[in-house]
Image (cartoon, rainbow, N blue to C red; front, side, top):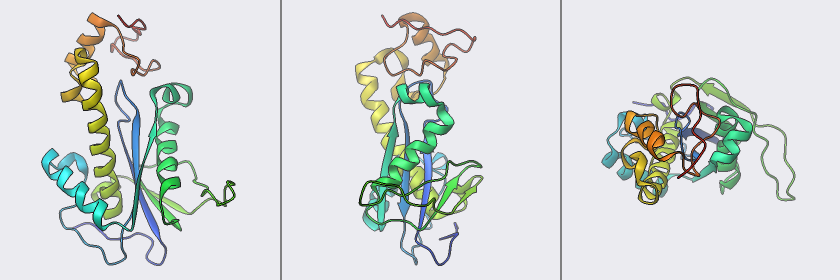
Length: 211
């Protein structure tokens, strides 16, 4: 069973991302604030849960969380600032949208760009305390909840793109570097949603023309 909270006496938001290792598509991140006494034994790392269960849990999280939000960073932005900082920016954008301002943050992984909360006058406050937790989505409920929201909303996005760009098998691989995805790039070039700073063909060369 996952732990309910890391910061016991603070309003805590858990954050996680989805799509960091993909060749195409935006990176998504979610931030979730759960009630102090929350306990959902079904929560776990989204990668260890079936798609059907993930979507059922998404509904539960959205109904039961005190606050939740999803942030997005586009492929163009990823190419400009690199995927590590893009992942953190997506988390910051999710945190900005929360209807309750957190007092602390826990993040899946071992790095994070400090988050300065958005104030009512449009300025930024002092950085919030945060803790990075390796495999945090398997240890804390709010991070697991964030991983499920980020994963399901990104999957929805990639499924929609797959209908527009059917060459890359995105409905199956969600933009990750599979054999069929790279074969699609070789045959058809890249789409407007591919990350041009990535090693798209796996050979060190980039295919920059979309046919």
